[in-house]
Length: 368
Length: 60
Image (cartoon, rainbow over all chains, first blue to last red; front, side, top):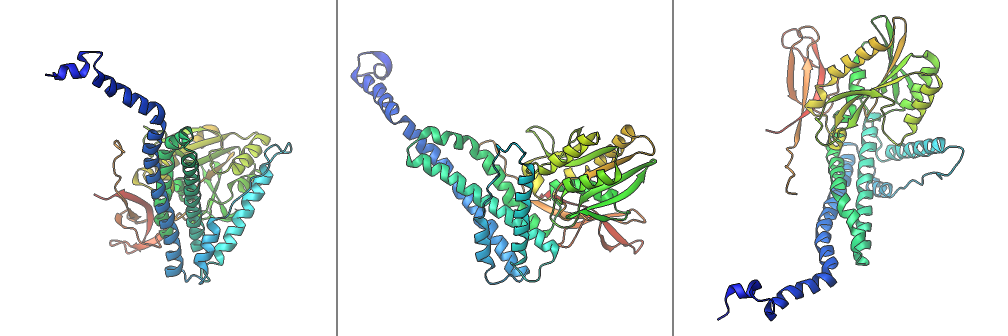
């Protein structure tokens, strides 16, 4: 009689034992990568399905919003489809003369064109509605692009049975999905005109300039003036309540040339690291402003030329919190940020001097 | 994923504050609410309240 003990390692010359060990080794040796590719493919294709769902949902919601609430033109759906395929060719980056003006020109041309296209989607749209639609359109276009790129990488790896090619995608997919989920959740907030987490900067500055006379200094960017402890404050933010970030780079350039502030303070939302608390406030130095980099470049240039120190106050938040409805934790920090800004002004200027305070971010739902 | 918790959806609220008596009231957000804009009347002083905050809180 064969004892179970002898089957599982009792005798080393047992042929059954040999088969039990050798066959899986041979299978894994020749087909290991393919098996792994199959398992990974299953996970990635589920994510691609989700991305496709997000993309379709955002597009559907935009078209429904246009047709139901804004009296869209009959060809609006077709125009939206066309817009999703638009692309931007970035300037040559080996240009020795500097590519910043070229990037700025390109980005602004695209923005102007998008704005004009959005205006044509529905006849009776207010500027506020236009800005909301433009933002939703950008969300839908981002989701569309994400889906296309992930699907391309996945299908290429599958077509060539190339397991190493799928590894970077497997590593990146959780981050991509987090971003995609955040973009999908941004649509309802944008549609209803609710302040976003990114709007904390405009919220603080908007409150500070409530009682002052406002004037437009750059495209969709307003400035107000106030006095504080014998210091003069120039307060700058995008013009709310539209869904816009304005042109803070241009506005800072103009105000520095005209008003010669002694310090610049920038208030913005910043991405938190894992483990950091949402809504925590931090101070630092330098131009706190995101985006493609053109505005930051302008502000850094003008500050350096005029020898103006740039201080930053940021409110930490996740990607999702930054582009969706502002959470209570973030909104509750507005007063703390304002008092920190006032403290920076007191500590770094003397009576008679002036400070330029810039609220950076999307000012949707935030007036001034 | 094993470690991910399902997040509860956020409900938008509007916090209004009376500029004269300082009374605060919280209600559900409605479209057309903007931060710092004038809103409903204060029950006590009958003056228009200002929208102090608009934020999202997770559903219970």
